[in-house]
Length: 217
Ligand code: MN
Image (cartoon, rainbow, N blue to C red; front, side, top):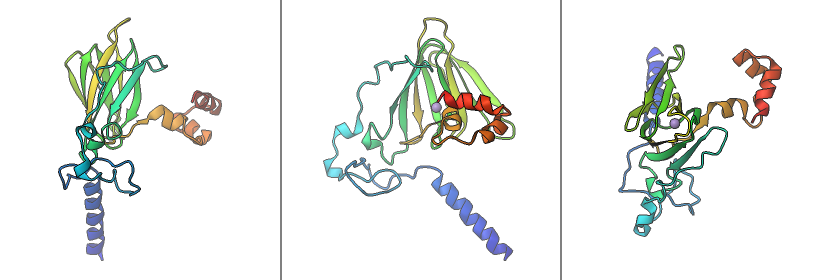
């Protein structure tokens, strides 16, 4: 009986490992076929004879994103949505523009590690380790510096170059579809809302303050 339980634990653990990352392709490529109604993990493949260079390319990443928003930042993603040829290949890109003192608010990518390079400006970046330590690992990066945000961990960026100075970074991510969970939006801006007594306990705040924060979303 104990052996069976151990075997079951092993099988479950192996399955979890095997499905935690995108699998290696079993063919040269699998251009996402938006017309297919097949439901698979990722997208169904277009007939490879129909693939063209356009399926593997994207234009315009040189163009600055519009940072006129409350966060003062703009992410321009280049993932399987923009490049259907990325389907099943397990990686993607993003350009991020920052207004002076602009922030990419604390967020996590449920399916990807992120490696960021500063192209222009100065960024303070950081991530927080998981419970129970919740250790903040943070650094100020200059042009040409590179930093890694491990998969699943909460992280952020802030432009600290000074007034009037914009910043730009490029990130590579280890998924064709990394996903983003912005912590504030997920916790205070969910639809429908998380009951405020739960958030009041979680954040040790008065319910009226929780309602006020929820109202911002
Ligand atoms: Mn990120």
